[in-house]
Image (cartoon, rainbow, N blue to C red; front, side, top):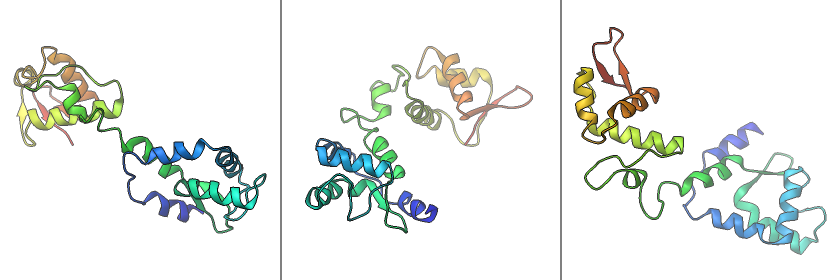
Length: 179
């Protein structure tokens, strides 16, 4: 069964709007019954306890993109597919990327994202923009670069270090880009 689950995890990334199909499926009573029975491990491709054959086929057709059958034919939720639905549409919010939402047009930092994944994405962008891969910079030079994007350069430096994007040399004399 683990091999089947692994095969499903490698499936293509869903379109950002694909989550609508799941929500639509959950609007029907038959689909909700089918989902509950799938979670309980009591559904096969041709049998949903509590539903007639016609309603079962319709409900399973709606839920099919979010399930898989194991070797015994029992249907299971595809956790990887469901998890990918959560992230499929996160980058665009109102048509703007994380970087666009949190940086001004001239590249100044407005605020930090509350979501760790978005915060990491923003910090990775800033690290790439402000530092070269082979540079070793003094703390003063790092601060000068960080001040291009924020007046709170110490906070930004701390975030870059905490997220493993910038490291201080052991002797404390310089910083360098990590990762």
